[in-house]
Image (cartoon, rainbow, N blue to C red; front, side):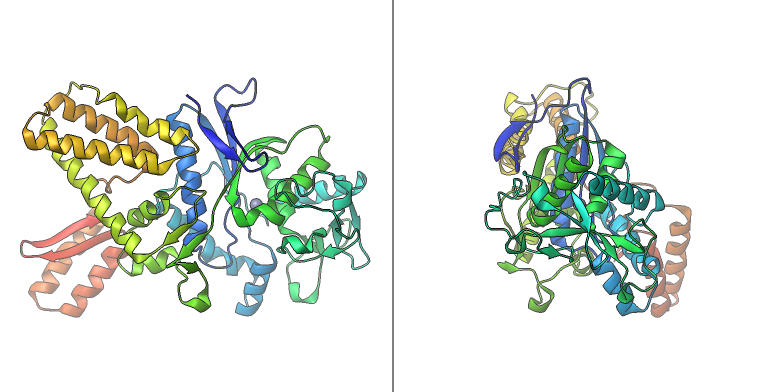
Amino acid sequence: MSPKVLNTLTRQIEEITPRPGEGKNLSLYTCGPTVYAHAHIGNFRAYVFEDLLQRHLHERGFAVRRVMNLTDVDDKTIRGAHAAGLPLADYTRPFKAAFFEDVKTLRLLPAEAYPEATHPEHIARMIAMIGALIERGHAYQAEDGSVYFRIASFADYGHLAHVDLEGQRPGQRVASDEYDKEAVADFALWKTWVPEDGAVGWESPWGKGRPGWHIECSAMATGLLGETIDIHCGGVDNIFPHHEAEIAQCECAGDGKKPFVRYWMHCAHLMVEGSKMAKSAGNFFTLRDLLDKGWTGREVRYALISVHYRGSLNFTLDGLAAARTALGRLDAWRARLTEAAGTENATESPARTTEEFFAALDDDLNISGALAVLFETLRESNRRMDEGTLTPKQARGLLDWLARVDGVLALEPAAATTIPPEVEELVSGRAAARAAKEWKKSDEIRDQIASLGWLVKDTKDGQKITRHP
Ligand SMILES: [Zn+2]
């Protein structure tokens, strides 16, 4: 059984198959964060959807090579660095580190590579690609010194976004990285240095400057994954102009015979409490904002994963509370099954219908269908445990199935791991501080323990230590 997905390019549901001679290998490129701020939950919706896709492909026996870029030079990062009075690399460094922490918190599988746009090797590749585009007549240096892609030279421009280019005015140019469909125009590949760029700039055959955002992804994607990539994902707001530009650049810089991407997949917008997320509306959340409010990474993951990726997701605090309840039910069920299985090692396969969980995901990642199977299985087996008719073998079989399900959902509670000695030491130090009624010291030690990734809770039986979920 091979998963089927909606390909944005063809608007058709298509079965994902590897290229001939590639065995079960698939390449996957996912547009990563622009490291000018902490990523917000709208960004993470896309990353969680991509993680679900990758995990389900693994379940179906595919080996996935995934690359996710980090945009560490573009209009936004330069603007941010300038405002903060910092060199670009110093400005973006903490946001990169924060992103990787968030990836762990949300249990996203790590990509094989996270190329950074400012790496000299990638800059060299961008310059080479722009050179090839000029040579083939697809790009030109304008009088402002910047190099632009000539969209009139590529008949397929607009196909991905299904933009009608009738009436577009040839020769119109747009220098910024982001613009809307009404402004279809030649876009910048290489932006000539301007004083606002400060120390940011690289030498090129067209003078000092910096790459445009779109060429960064094109160069890193093809540089690391080859001229044709199997699956390319992103949010719907990436379709135009970003992905449209990526196609134009890659297909025109190559021999023109190979498609850049075989399957394009895009996830829909995320709304918060019914409206568009915006700092000005006070409904703008980073993952950190939610953790500070007491929600856990897996609760946020559940809330983001449980709505079909092509449906618009209305993210609400009620939704997070519902995620907490659902996870509580799953945890209680797992504990009950574990008890029912006892020491039984032999398994009896659960009902045939449990395969429907994976079959639902084959159908364009139909998560609602998959979760319905999961909770129906939970209800049915709970009923049988109430009646005392579920055998230990069947309980073991359900636990094995649940482990397989969790390979895709990654919602299991954090494993009970051994507490490291440095944490043990802090915990006993804190017990001493509390015995001496040194509350401030006790709180300080609690924060130190938290910074090591552990939570301490005071109960009537003393301190309880758990791994931060
Ligand atoms: Zn990209």
